[in-house]
Image 1 (cartoon, rainbow, N blue to C red):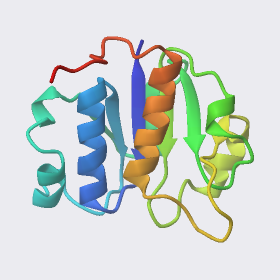
Image 2 (cartoon, helix red, strand yellow):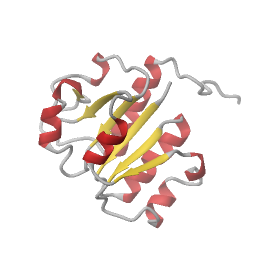
Image 3 (cartoon, rainbow, N blue to C red):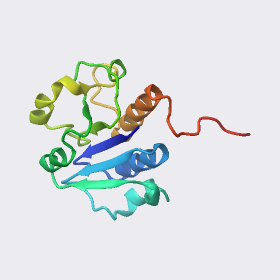
Length: 160
């Protein structure tokens, strides 16, 4: 099973580093859509990702159009956005799922969200709050998909 995490226009390097670490730990591929608010060699991003960078599959796309062109017909896009009415737990994630998360301060652009609203999902939260931290939202989404897939190729026990 292939899982893809997509960060559209990320602005905070530590968030992207945290997401990269989650991707490395779970085997998910990471897609970054430009423009970004930092350089790929940003020390804060590298530090948040620890020494997992070599265990990670990262693809950088120049724009949403470039991303869609390179991934068309390769899987299902799931847009995680507070503007959605559909709960992220109420959908079934198939192989080659793309979980797409928008810019930390503005989310997914409205025109893109409108075009894909049937696959937009939200993480429930209390009224009156804007959103969860992006890297936390990614972790919530990733582990729901992996739970549905019965955690393929992941070690799900430990030794004391």
